[in-house]
Image (tube, rainbow, N blue to C red):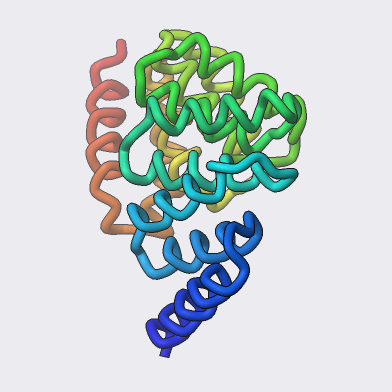
Amino acid sequence: RQVGHWRDSIHLYRHALAATGRNPIVHNNLGIALVDAGRIEEALDVYREGLARPSAFAHVLAYNAGIASARLGRHAEARQYFDGVLASDPNHAEALYHRARSLRALRQLEAAQRDLARAVALAPDASEPRVELGLVLGQLGRFADARRELERAVALAPGNLEARINLAVAWLELGHPAAAIRELERVLAAHPDHAAASRYLATARARLAAQP
């Protein structure tokens, strides 16, 4: 039934474009329908078509084109789209977050950290930017700062497994395996088959046993 819904929506929006010509809102809606159907490459082409002519809706198309590009692993292209969004709205917290994810994929960690610090300041109650910031800070070797952000992320979203596992990793890097064990056991209590958590738990227990 869902596949039929996507097919009907795609047909509807393609028909609307054929009838009206270039319409950025219809381009955007068609792109979203294609993404929902898993047709990311086609969606990106549609977003590009919508961006070919300037409009007041361009920042929405650019944002969605950035998301689609990132999903295809084209992070340099995604960054360019997010650059365009942020040129028109420097306080777009979601664009900052997603640009930072692409910057991290491109190994531009300092730039990613700056974007995430801004995203966190703009959306302090959102957990995902804090998780990403913790990851970036850890990759920069700033494990105390990473721990702080990941603890805040866990407080905001206690069920976020990525936050808890990366908090455990930060505790390990800081030489506190007991704290890491505490976080990992919470993950495994809810998800006993979580392979990464099991591996880190074994490492944490070995490090704790080796402590004097």
